[in-house]
Image (cartoon, rainbow, N blue to C red; front, side, top):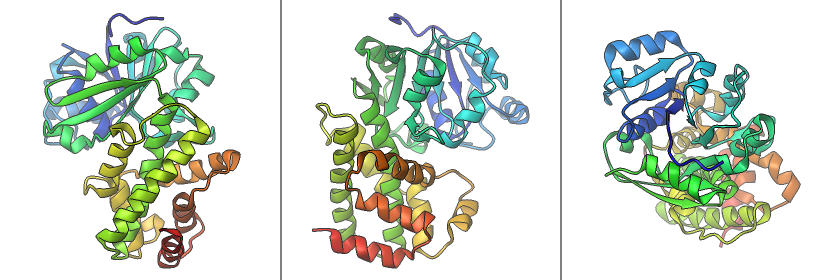
Length: 333
């Protein structure tokens, strides 16, 4: 199905990235639909004029937003659905869904793997909800929600097997501070979005261990090579690994203080237990879940991925960060 216009647009999710995306969409759309799980959060949002839990300095004209905690109602009233829930919770949200998605344009802004399924979010929609692949798009690229909230320049890549549908989504997201490009490399963009979170945890661990900039630069260089090896094994096609959807997203997530995965890794490197670091953050570090998922997926492909293996050993095998990073460092050149 070719989507000539986006029609009614919905945001599915209530976190910081969902809030930033709602802001972007309202630059083009007069109104949007917005699914949030909790009625009390919706009521507080309406009363305050901002998300009470995330990006609280970002104010909205709530008269332009149709909130609902009923995902079926939101899906029925929308033509384009932008899913922005954390990957560990996407299945629980969708379990409530009784409405068909086959005639919808489904956009995933989720940078994670569907737990227990071993597949990307786009593949999950295709496999479980029978959405044609040409109607599934993904969003990649360096895009911290905090910077979107401040109107700082952001560069997004929209991936879809149907280039025309990719452009429909790109037009929806383009404004004075968001630049967009389109690509057909859906799985490549999605897998790189997962891996960059894993590598950001590695960068944080090294920062917590007080490794210097020299080592961080070598870590980045090896990370992009590792990412490229995996993408070539999983989805071999022409891609520029130096493009913003791959290297750009990797760099910002490994270096930025806005990166919750880097912050999480830093705490682990400083000696916090995984559980304590998660409790202290009060936000989800997608890379924690992504590490285990990618480790399982790579059992099918057997790609040489020493950074992924090191992060997995630290987070799940409870190997000392200093010991594991020393072994990793000895493998670098």
